[in-house]
Image 1 (cartoon, rainbow, N blue to C red):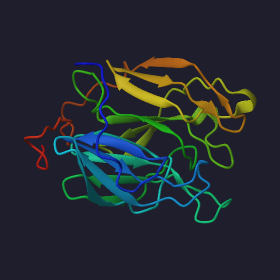
Image 2: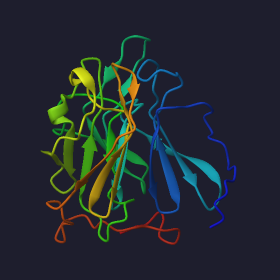
Image 3: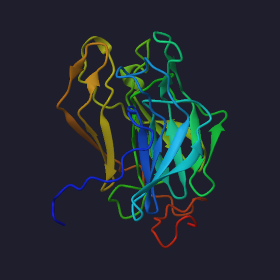
Length: 246
């Protein structure tokens, strides 16, 4: 309303980068991260923190099943979904993940989803379009995930758009995101925004080349309508419903 910034309670764990976050109710959940400057070259953490906006306070919110930095998350209904990421217990020995975790903010528990892996292989610095935080009239039950990189340059550009169906708990293949990178390197470190039944890929970089991008690309999701009969209600939560939410 005033277009001004205010300094709030500092992050309780000190310096941490490569985190991922999502909103639920009156809170912001922050997942994982690392202490080192370089992506995927330092020890990641399993820790999850919750920032209560009304109380301006931080709380412990459980642990992920794997230490992850540079992952991506998105919320649909009462669950938050985590994709990919990396960890480097010893500098120079990066581990990249293709796994999915499902986090329940009401119980502060995270479960590794068995049998569902990212198409195109493990990767970090990918991006998920959060249908719950978008401006569509009804949030879709599909999470769009684009880009990312690993030590082998995966996924290939033609496989840089996966769609996770939260009702089927599985992946579909989406239309490839414009890459803009030379030598078939993949786009990463970008933002993916979901709103008005569209997804927008903003900026990013070509990790191997180290070249930042100014591109903004849009895809209309004409074949991705909200699923009215789905088993998970894509509902919003607020301060009066947390931690109980439909």
